[in-house]
Image 1: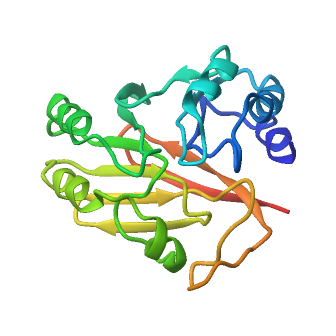
Image 2: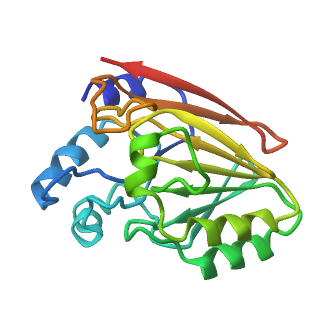
Length: 212
């Protein structure tokens, strides 16, 4: 609740939740607890499922406060097109992404997903929990003639990567972090979120807010 108390006092257009609202044994009770906190936020809330979530239960419980961001959901922020992609199964739909890129040919675009797509410095998570079809997705994004920005979670860390025309922002977890250099499971008890500001040129500035 500390994160929600901090977020509610900030000025922003939308809150994007990138999955793993539940940690283990996802159920209606866990989502209801989170919903109770979200009721303090008046802005639009967009939510994707993570690999620990049960989307049917999540959406049934929280549908009154979140936008329907199942696979292929599109929205624009600051006139910049965003595609929300469901990767909770460990894969992404190539068809949804391809359709989105064709629609916005020559335009800078953003993808929001639970899983990162391009490789990161997060050694433990990269070895065990990477997106299974990441190379196929990355190859598709490389064909886009304009910049592509990915915003993702899943890796329990805050890190950025750049590959060709792709910039990737991995946001921290609100539960715990895993040190980037850890080769075995380890916990950093900090938690936090990212503030992302997008300008009229579709470029973004990222600030990580750490809480303890």
